[in-house]
Structures are given as C-alpha cells and as structure tokens.
Image 1 (cartoon, helix red, strand yellow):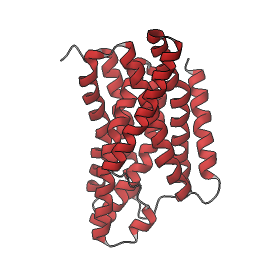
Image 2 (image 1 turned 180 degrees about the vertical axis):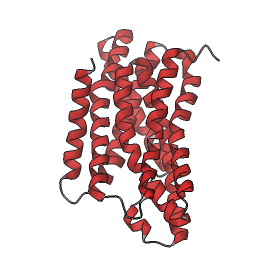
Image 3 (image 1 turned 90 degrees about the vertical axis):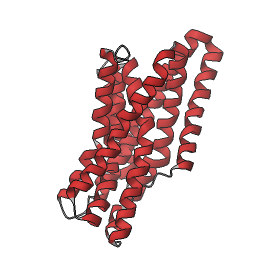
Length: 264
C-alpha cells in the first residue's frame, strides 16, 4: 500500500486537499450577519465555470486524445477520447439523477423558518459532498500526470468551492445559530474531494496504462464541462443583475489561458 503513495501521488493528494478545503472559506460568510453580495457570487461562480470549461477543452481533452492516439492511432485515438468525454458527461448526469445538486438561494433561504433552513443546509451539504467526489478524482489524476495542469484545475475548483461553502454554511448558521456547526458542514463537504481522490487512486493505480489514463482524462473533461454548464454558469446567472456572469466566465478563461502559458 505504501508503494502506491509515491512523492508524486502525495503531491497530487495535497493539491486535492487544498482545493477541497477551500469550501471552508465559504463558511467565513457566517462571521457577519448580513448576506453575501449576490454580484460577487455571480462573478465567482462564472469565473470558476469559465476556467473549468477552458482547461477541460483546451488541456485535459487534448491530453486524453494525445495519450490514446499514441496507443491506438489517429482515428481510433480521437474516437476513444470523444467517447470517454461523453461517457463522463453521462456519468455525472446519472449522479445528478441519483443525488440532485441544489445550489441554495442564500437570500431566500435566510428568510425561511429555522426547520426549513436546517433542511436546506443539510441537503446542500449532502449533495455537494457527493458531487465533490469526482472533482477530487479529476484534480488528483490531473496533478499526478502534470502538476501544472493539476494546479490550474485545482485553482478553478477551489474558486467554485467557495460559493458552494456559502450555500452550505449560511442556512446552517441561521438555522442553528452555531458558527462551529456551519463550518464543520463545509469541512465535511470539502473532505469529499481528497476521499474521492484516494478511492479512485486505490482502484485505478494497478491499471494506469496510457490507454486508461487517456480514457480517464477524457471522462474528467466531460465531467468538468457538464458541471460548469449545468451548475456553475446557471447559478451565476441567477445571482447576476447584469453582465457579471459573462464577464466572470470570460475572466476565468483568460486567467487560465495566461496561467497555462506562463507556467509552461
């Protein structure tokens, strides 16, 4: 078992832990009694969505195709990468069917009764925890293969984990009056990412051939694009009052593009 966790694997796990625990930053919203600024939430969500779409389509899917082309030739390589991409999309759609992922409207939730707030907070925590598992796998395997790529993906995931933390912490705090309980709810959700990384690594480490890596990256790209389009960008539009979602999305793409160039 110890042989599996090489220096590279430990580095990838560390990056995944940092990305996951950024959820805790969302609990800082409960240190003040007023609500989080909806426009800032819109920008943050859209920024993360744009960053994740860009890095998935420009880098991760390219790495998938590259690995598979080397093993199976041009046509089959690109075909397998494409199939893996949409397999990832279908996998996360299936997860959505099993555990719908609510993005609580913080302002509306805070006006509800305490029992409703508690239900909203716990439901959000459970759903976000489940959805953080594949994100943890994505960050881990991306970092394991390429620390620069993994770090940029972790940055994008960390950004969108912050407003997710807010959607958990604020209703829990207003329901219970306990900042500690609100913070611990975000800790549990954040730890799902390294847990998902470790479980995925233990299952896949013995069979990490170039073909498996290529298929895995294709699926990761599909998962990240779907999460961005289905969750982050629509949520950003709900919080926005103008063009914040569009500006945030383009800003996220621009920052990731520049970072990928500078970190080569």
